[in-house]
Image 1 (spheres, rainbow, N blue to C red):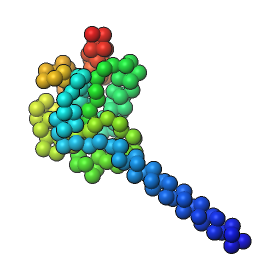
Image 2 (tube, one colour; image 1 turned 60 degrees about the horizontal axis):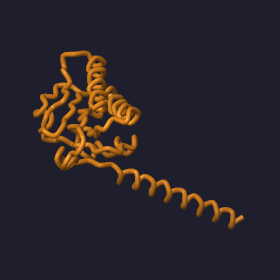
Image 3 (spheres, one colour; image 1 turned 30 degrees about the vertical axis):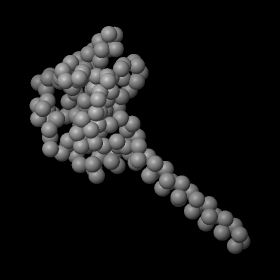
Image 4 (cartoon, one colour; image 1 turned 135 degrees about the horizontal axis):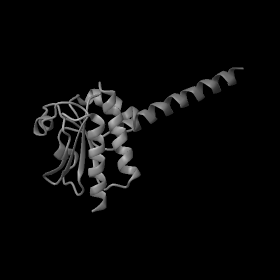
Length: 158
C-alpha cells in the first residue's frame, strides 16, 4: 500500500514539474519589445502593424485573423502587434495564445502618435519608411479589414 501511495505522489510530482516547465518554456517564446526598431531592427519584408488592446475582444480577433490570413496565403509580410499595455499585462495573454510574432509595448505611445491611432484595432502596412496602407478610422471595421487584405494580396502578387 505504501509503495502505491509513494508511486502516486512521485507521479503527481513529475506531472506538476512538467506543467511548470511547459509554462516557463511557453512564456520564454513570447517576444515583447519597447520599440518597433528593437522588435524588427532591419526589416527585410513589409511589416503589418496591428494596434490592439487587451480589453478589446475585436482586437484579439483581428490579431488571429491577420496571422491566419498571412500564413494561409503565404504573404511575405511580417506581423507585429502594438499595444499600450505594460509588458507584465501583455505576457500572460500572449503566452496563453502562443503568439510567435513580436509585440511592442508602446507605453510612451510613440507609434500611436506617429500613426494617429484613435481606435483599436488599427492596421498599418510599412515598407521600409513608407506607409503602404493605413486604416481610415472613419470607416466601418469590416470595410477596413477588407481593404487591408486587398493591400496584402497586392503585395504578395508583386
